[in-house]
Image (cartoon, rainbow, N blue to C red; front, top):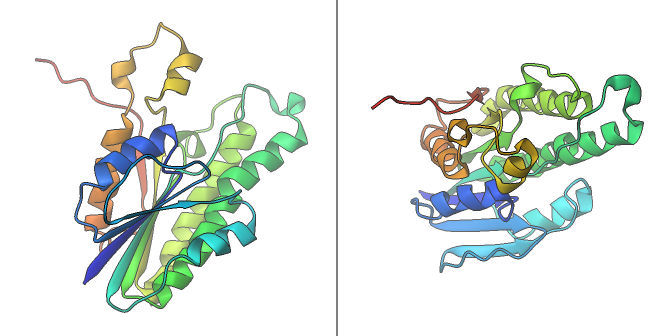
Length: 231
């Protein structure tokens, strides 16, 4: 049985680190989707440039590059999403909510929809979305973002229930703050960055879930931070 991997958002700060880990694993073919060209090369890698994934036509076009097969198990990890925050509800523009719903929830809905159709006509597979820790533990000033990410968790858990009939498992990771250049700039110099989870560490988590996709489904994998081990 062949294993094919799809990574959406492979050129972002999280996507790059995860992709660098997963391209070294045992997938016969890897598809990298992003709005920007990806620098990673390999004989088994196909790079596919996509438009706004909140537009259903763009998602349909992305999946048109992949053909179903009863000889293939498909695996998909999506890093697609965005952040908006810093204001109380009464100061939040409605457009901020629409932006977060489109970028965080609608993209997962459409990617999940067409990936499920691919898996339905294949040997099976697994999808792993990226939610956020605040989708489980509300924080002030993050209502549009938190609402959209908590909805991703509901989407994942429901898809896991529906996916049983087509041999599809669904899970999501819920990181707190990931160690990326943008997050370091936002947080300033007074934070202990060793507590943050690295994109490469998330890549190993993703691979572990996919290795065990037949028994892990409907799970929210909480990633609050890294433990410090005293020497």
